[in-house]
Image (cartoon, rainbow, N blue to C red; front, side, top):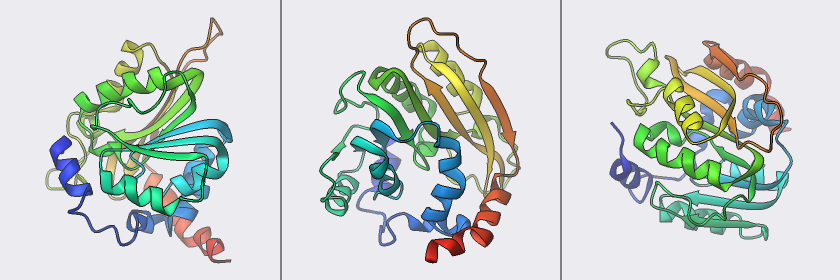
Length: 246
């Protein structure tokens, strides 16, 4: 099971970042197609935003799409090598800042300062103790009414069969466990979508939650079970990715 030392070791100096993370977007035909075909449709009501906090940006695969959608951006990563890479890659983005952390806290981010907190394809390797710390931190960093969108493991409730690739997902995490954390720390669930990852049935989860704002009436959260997420990726790769080359 991945832990902080595993994540620090693998994604730091021991990982070859020659493709800057683009290798993980191959099933979608590249990160541009994945962003506009899969992620942006799920995020479009949140963007543009005044301020965005990204957790674990890596080498900036999603950062390049977030930066044009905000006036102030902060990226926080466990690995100093990723922080340095992003500082170099986005050196011309005067509204962006990149900082490192201990893999549990978001101390570099001011409290109640962000409209959106985003993390995709990183926290899937975080066990429940790490997510417990992060959910509390995220809700503290969001402005009242601000929204978080995080991608995490659903291994504990997945339909993985014995011997099937678990894609190094955190074994202790499930959709319901994360929803419970959001509730315990005073957040409001918005949407939770359990998805199939590549070839692994319902292995992952996309969770959107909000920091409450006043006494406004809160709609009931939406719960989705999506066994077609991998099919979506294939369609994007075949019919949307070619437009990224124009």
